[in-house]
Length: 288
Image 1 (cartoon, one colour):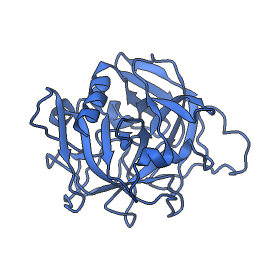
Image 2: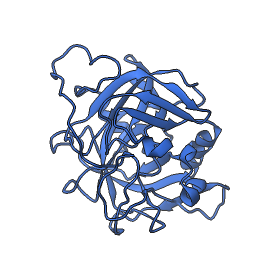
Image 3: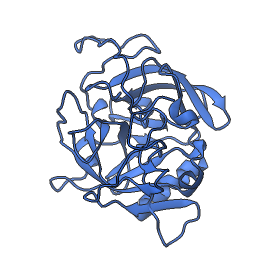
Image 4: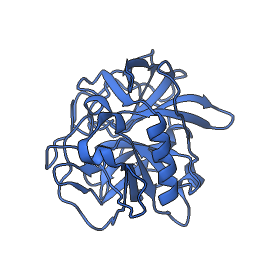
């Protein structure tokens, strides 16, 4: 799978180690000022490639199913953003999005977006730029304070557990969900779903979106055909059932899993959200 050229060669992901041991989970406070040397190269976390064709922002409908297009700035799209190391001066290399939580401060992404497996340590200086376009994020940068992922991912990079929840610091006295709202998490939604995927290829300063139906790749992995989802799109939410009245949708997967999300730009994967992900989500709320 395609990945950003980084300082090391394996995945990255945050671990949070808690003494209160819920077996199978890791959690750790991320000191934003403590720079860990090196992000790793894995999956669709970051290598530049060819730009998809931009769609006219005034267009009234998205591109045909399976084809990437440039989404308009909307309340729905504003919950998806680019992940940077420390600040916006470098390349964005992964994607994350806001999910609802009691603390109103949670993102979901791929586990490999936050842990350097070669170093065996977290990358502690990541920030989130929601609705980032052409150097501008309307709500600025949000610091990632804590990451929760399954300890089995940290030990073996199990592709079926390539999911992480990120806890953000407040910004200007507000939680991110207070500013942008959040999507719900969908567990055991089956393998056939109409979804919209939005992500940030490293080669672009605007997001791309794609709409298509998911298919079953294995008992634990979803598959989708969407063009131009290259490096940088790891962690992109697979959003189903968006309700314009409540302004919420349901995240049923994140780009990652098999081969870190896939080794072709036009085919992507996601770990199936099962009881393990449900438990991880609950644990993330408990340790917040």
